[in-house]
Length: 139
Image (cartoon, rainbow, N blue to C red; front, side, top):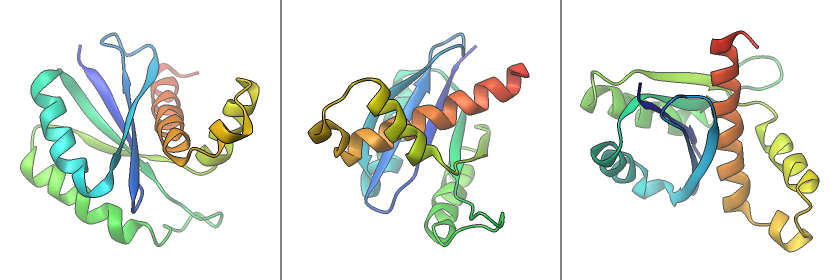
């Protein structure tokens, strides 16, 4: 069983989380500059066994795709073209930033730490991954 890689795609920065090999726990991995994301993923796949990639699907409250999809879709198309055997799936990412901030508050992080946008992106990727894994277990 391989890991699951999760992506919270942003125009400038992208948060990345990964599961353990048994796919039980989501852990924040890092945040990378979005223009370096594809190369980061390719290098990560050379080092670790990854079963699938999960990408946060930005939706508006009326369930329509947000304008961020114009940036995400070309990236997903590139992944699917160059990694045809790697499943790439979307997971609704609404409220992940709000949940990430709440998680940071509950963890007792100081205000300065909570303003770290890279950390928010990484935690958001972790929440996207945890949501996906829980949905597969029927929780």
